[in-house]
Structures are given as structure tokens and as C-alpha cells.
Image (cartoon, rainbow, N blue to C red):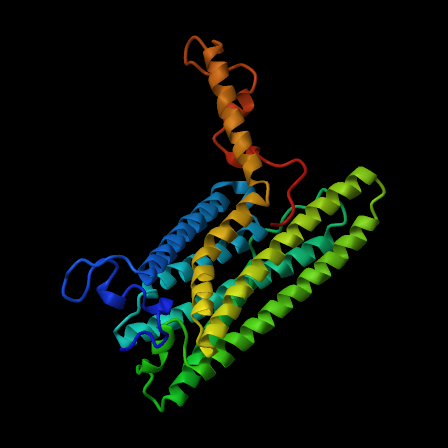
Length: 354
């Protein structure tokens, strides 16, 4: 199968010329510009995978982050991780048409799933701002019916859209669904034009616009609630926290939307510059989002408290606060040092939805 119709396009970087360092006859050849860019894309995607894993472990490690908002974010990270993984698998092209179809369908699904989870996060943030009129927020709801509805939408709706896309693909190819030769100019990362437009672009635009609407509504509600605060210090602190949250969601929305827009442009406009920009954005989006969600919240504060509690435990042990029989610590900081539960590492006040 021809994997690239663009001259010098990124989609043929890995397979072009017989690999990074070798030609078709097995002789060693110098690195070309295409192979260097391909190597950078793979390295960027690998860094994104590591960053997403770190962010996922962070939110699953601390009990304070395993709320409804934190769990929805973990699902977003999982969808982005699968996107990056399938992207790395297909970056060099897949010769088998059936594998190519499976890869295209998988990427189609997880891209939409990531956008859907972003929409659920914006929806939850809006309701959180609307229902909490004070800086000290009410307790986060448990993972019950609301999370089940979020999961049914964010994982189920992309499946419906994928079936719709494959149906359109099947119709356009007159029943020869495994014939993926028309994907040659863009590898296996996109379906045909009609399936791509009506199964990915149109739903993505609708999801992104709805997300932006919820962000705008959340900003309006936050402004009204902030204006109701009497204490100037409380008003300033609430404005800062609400602004950070809204800006965080807006940055993630812009980043994911930009990658999809670049992919759509490369689908219909044969340009090496656009193709390289799409691949770089797709490869690096994971690490950018991982940095955003771990640096724009109070995760570092939890880490700091953990380090301080461990240091206090060592200092107490070195000071001789031990029982003569069992060596139990009995000095200052004992309540934290003796506990192995991370539930003691809570915020004061309770954190807002992330």
C-alpha cells in the first residue's frame, strides 16, 4: 500500500528509505531531514506518554484527587494516552489494510472520547461554580449516578459516531471496507473524506462549541458569585482560583482543537508545513496537557506536605522519642507520622473542582 503521496511528507518518514539508518539493500546511509523529524516525533510522543502516565498516577495516588472532577480528568488522560499510543504505532505506516482500518477507527474513537471527557469536565465545573457560592466549597459528590452518566456519554457517544463513520466508509467503498488505499496520502490516521467530515469534524466542532459555551457560562456565574462576596480578601482569592480553573480548561480546549484543525487541513490541503505542524502538535499535546493539569492545581502542595511529614518523622526518630518496649514514636507530629493514609493530607479550605 502506498503510504505517502506528499513529497517529503512526515507520514513516510519511518518507512521511507528503508528506515532511519539503512537503505533497501542493507547499506548504512546518513540521516535525512525526514528521518530526523520522524525521530523527533517519536521522541516527543514517548515523552507525552510518560507525562500522561505521571499525571494519571498522581491523580490516582492521592485520595484528595479521587473526586468526581479528578476521576473525569483521569478518564481524559486515559483517552489521550491511547491517542498517543495509537499515533506512535501508525506514525510509520501500516501495510496491512485491515490493521490500517483498525488503527484509523481506534484513533477516530479516542480523539472523540477525549473531547467528550473535556466537555463533561466543563459541565461539572459550571455546576460546581453555580452550586457553591462560598470560597469554602461543599464536599465533592461521590462517584454515583452522575459519573455513570458522564461515562455513558464520554465513552458511548464516540462509539456511535465511529459506527456512523464506518457505515459511511462502507457505503462509499461499495462494501469493500478493508480497501484502505485511499488512506495512502495520510497513512491510517483518517478515514475517507465523507467519513472524516461527518464522523469526526462535524461532531468535534459541536463538542468544542458546547465546551466553550459551558466555559463562558462558568465565567459569568463565577463573576456574579465573586461580586457577592463582602470580604475583599475572600473576593480576591476566589477570583484568582476561579480564573485559574477556567483558563486551564480553555487552554486544554484550544490545544486539542488546534490539533484536530491541523489534521483536517492536512486532509484537504497538501502541504508539508501543515503536515509537519500536525504531527508535532499531535506528538507533543500529551506532555503539554500533563504539565497543565499537574502544575495548575495544588498537587505540588500535597507532595510538599508528604515530604514535610516524612522529614518530621525522621527528625522525631533522631531526637529519641521512642518507647522503651516497641520503639513507637511519641513526639510532636506523631498523628501524621504514624498514619499511612493520605486522607490527612487535605487542603484547607477544600479544593475546587479541577
